[in-house]
Length: 401
Image 1 (cartoon, rainbow, N blue to C red):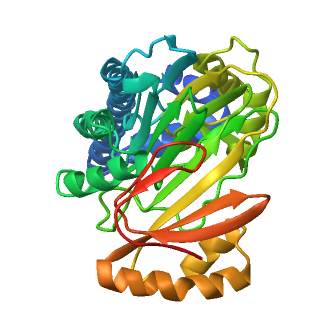
Image 2 (image 1 turned 180 degrees about the vertical axis):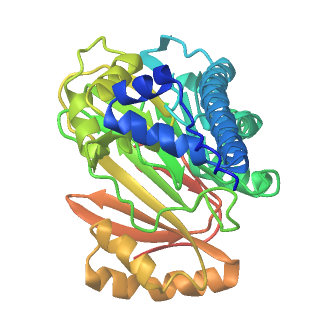
């Protein structure tokens, strides 16, 4: 009978058992798990790790590209500001008895480009100012700023009144602006008569600092140029008998931010009144920058410093051109009320003005101020303002209201 084979005993290396027993419990557990993980899982883990590395690399490249684009954007905005400044004229320090200055600051963002201004001499010692803002921004707006500025300047130099210059310019520029529109203001100052005449096309009125500031009438304001509506319909004549400073500005100045609020015309007017006698437009812009937190649009300022002694700035004349369908409207009534015309005068005035407008196609309603009373009359639209005393030249009908 055959004897059973002796049992075989497997002897494991003593050093492996001793090494594993020397590991901490967590390490021994991980070692066991690693030992049973299939090779396919290791391949998947390796692929996921490679994908993570690739994603991290892409993130680093994207961050680097973003920084590069931001630098290029800042450089482009700076270039736009420099191009804009190069297109703007150098304003003479003095034009006869009037000290003049202008300043421009590009926006701190995509709103850069679009503002324009000009200050120049006219015949008979008058001074002209043009200021405005094209709706577009960047390099594309720059040719339009030059076009509008030179167009309005040419009409003022040709002898048109500010209202006539804006009205004619609106017709000429309407089809040259494409999808853009422009707010603009044209003004003239006559040092002999001490009269400031201005007309706005959707643009903020000038601020006048003197013995007493005046409150501009903004009711029935004329439309911007290029929106398909008639413009050049309003004009204001001011008498500045004493020392005064006139500030023409773009809305980028008053629409800067102080916290959650707009800077506003009130703050600008107070800053204007606080300027030293020899302060210039650059000083005013710097003060605005120092007191605001955000400046999303261009800022442009023109200052005229008028010499003199006492005397209160006074409105001599308000004008509005109306078509036959606009005469007897609530908008016209609001304008006359804002000018100080009484209700009885309004009711008595409008029928005659409407009849003339139907016959002639339009009528020019004028509000004058005599003995503290606002009095209105109407005339044909071919009227040229001559003197602060109220003399004028008119062809066509004129009737007292």
